[in-house]
Image (cartoon, rainbow over all chains, first blue to last red; front, top):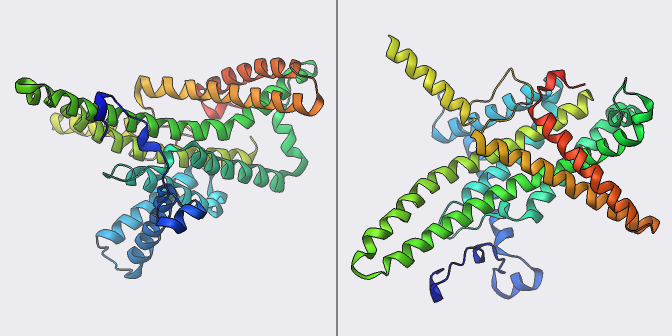
Length: 251
Length: 97
């Protein structure tokens, strides 16, 4: 689709189009929202079905569900500590939602909702509000001591406090930019090399041979993107846990 | 069996490099994604701190009507916070107080 007019059109894959006909168009139900809904349904189905049998020797889906559960639990308990267990449902939901978003985006014709900063920033903003509320509830006014380390000379306060506040506020931004930029970069690269295949393939007799090169690159890229898709979901979850650790223990 | 040991070691390193294993002991260390990954993360930290600083300065300016002075001031604070973020990225969290 990208080779029409002999140009590389790598960004049109991120455009939002309404689905579900007139109803979808009038409420702004786009393919992005449809994929989010699909991810939520898939995650729920996976956990519900995986846990329905409760076999001692797990089947495939039960093993998958259990390993996902244990993976996130180890992550949360390892980072936050034992008292972090109450945040497990939150981090698990977040991790699975991001993971499924990234992985669904690797399927042909699918849309990657994590490639939109509106989505990733919303997720990061939820994390940010949660860690701030948790820190305020647990520590009250002592939370504001976070912005000025003990033992620093008092005349440095006009510099340290704004810098610490800006650093604190940059957390949701870096969290969202990291995920969004990784997904966009990966999908743009895939599309660019896929376009090369089409363009070079049309070069007459030598076309198919030259086109094999970008095709090989693209195959490697797909594997790499699957790695990135998992890694970014992991990074999102582990950073959330680190921030929760800061909120619970306040250094 | 030396070959087997070498393989186990390589497997462990590869798993570590790709973040397949959750690291139980290390506190707050992110999976290392090679030089590119480290550079990208540092870049994201600086850029996001700058965005946060500029946004905060701009909002305060709008509230107080002091455009553009707080904007400039918080631009600098954003840069400093970005350097601080990168510093924290590479500093072991245990030492952080």
